[in-house]
Image (tube, rainbow, N blue to C red; front, side, top):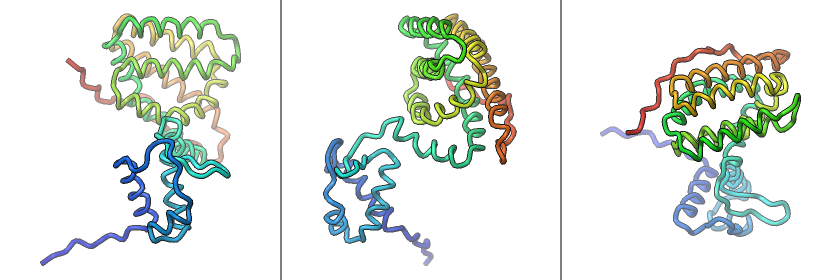
Length: 252
């Protein structure tokens, strides 16, 4: 007879899993306040230290919201909450931003192509209004970062792929951090010009053109980001600026 070695599970992991089971079963619902730590620890038969570790893990995942002096409340994870671990990863090791930019290069050109293939009158209007607002921006306008995020978000919604949209929403916070470095270095005019080429291709329903325009835009973003952080002690590793990802399958 053979047996598979049993893995040891940390107490905090077990508590976190049990709490998630309560969430899945509806025993805990959004907005509900958790019982006091002493009571919860007694129910689980664990130390308060282990309990706090478990609560902290669920807080990082966006399932809990600890309010100073008011207790801990159940919440529904949103993009901002789920982006926190990624933001911590990049802020702790800035060179990890290179991996993020590489990920965008693999994903967002295909998002632009899907947006072109699935263009609707509503998306046409939204992108047209986005371009009009961006063209009105002046040098060093602080609204550029917001408009840049709105533009990429509009394309993600236009792709009409729920998983892609949720992934990009999860990364929204860390993408904003990268924008804060790259956009001031790039300036509004090159950025808006590149966005305009993407929009024109999408509005023309030119999938290949939208894909290529987005790829070229992200290449410029990568180069600009590199220049902005080249003073780092441990610079970001070199990126392949021309990856050739397999395209997303088109829906019939």
